[in-house]
Image 1 (tube, rainbow, N blue to C red):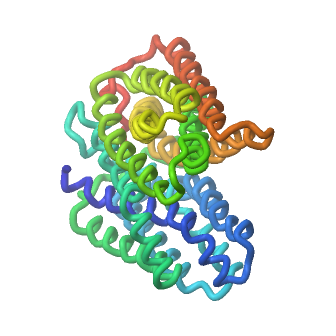
Image 2: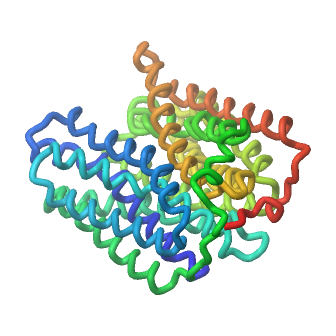
Image 3: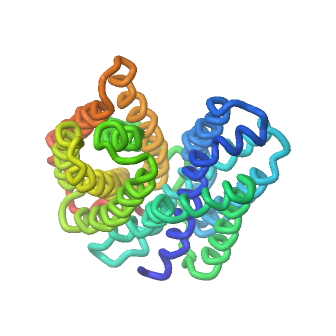
Length: 393
């Protein structure tokens, strides 16, 4: 890994940890705050709302500032509000602090993705972005289980204080290692939003929200799928989640390599096609435990493999709106999460088996595939080389 990218990877580690660790600590938080578990679930929604609102807002504010200073400020905000979350006196204040903790999420990844692509060697831009998102995948693989255990053994408050510690270390490495970059004097809120007057911007976001949601439809219900369809013991589910996490780490790296070897839109089409096939295989063959484990790994791999090509597609297509585009992508990923969980749950609401969410996911991935084909057919006459699309700032 390029050492200049390491601070961005570390930031991704902290963000990934705080986003997902709350899911494993809901019972502890609910008991400590005197609320029901469903009410405690609003903490997840509050963070997601912060991501969606903060991404465009903070990028808009940052247009006249040095990227390094902006990333420093975002991580200071992240560190502060996660630390305060660990000290929250009551549930209402914790809801507000979780919302505030989510504000820098999208902007950090959005600006970080552009910075990572600019710091990369020629032909390695997507791999550089993948290295930033490596922190997010490692968080799911290792940090979330570890911090969840700490929170369960000691107090849920220690989980957020630990995240704040990661944030503080990230601030240090951004200051020490991330190179200064010139501020683009032509950049403005108007120029950053200019791209979103075009149909292609919203088509990329729609590809993300629909196509990426396919794997969330599967992942949201992977535990009951493993127990009721594959007939694994509930005590074996953590190992299944670990297997999916390993797949995500490997898929993140492979996705970056693939997006550098071929056009990002074509890479997305290939990966969505593989998602459709794999999710259909989950639907038909999860009753076999050996197949179930193999498919869990493959689904985890494909879930993150598509991330780099889709982000690269937005950055290279958005040009001078790249930072805002990359930030909006984080909002789109959160929408994908919500849509995947919703559509994956619809068959269950009608009494169908726990393998049916993967069928819903296959349909969503197919939607992403079709929309990606539409993108190529509609905009194929434009320049296609990554170098031609590199943003000016």
